[in-house]
Length: 202
Image (tube, rainbow, N blue to C red):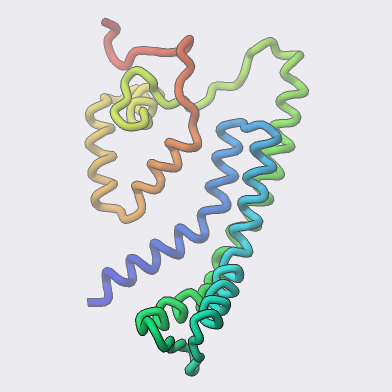
């Protein structure tokens, strides 16, 4: 009876904790510019204070509609359902327990990624266009994002098997789809000059 809500709660906590590191990972693997690092840095800071902003907005909403606080709940005169909404939003500050550590990890990761990217750009003159092998999503063999075909190409596995495994994991493991979306965002599409066929060349 309480199994599904527990899964949903754990999934929510996992997502809240992983936002900051996931953003830092995207910046690291994409090798984004300094401007993008600064943008994502401000995004992580905003994410860290967002629970308090939501609570502050809920209190302002309660004041505007004349809602009165009863213990930890609000009751509103005109739309009765608004009391439940304001009550839920006002308790958002509890999410700071998970959001703030995630935002701190994201900020630290972005700072490290920015320093590494700066060193790479300084050394780019010495190494003429040669960069370490990166994980590229496939442009030619993609159905959605090219993640499965990139995995098949990198580890020399049959493409259809990788796709079937991905679909099964997306059904069986809650939240696996978020990992797929993260791979979609974190890894760039394969450059046209580096396209390689999967399996036999036609």
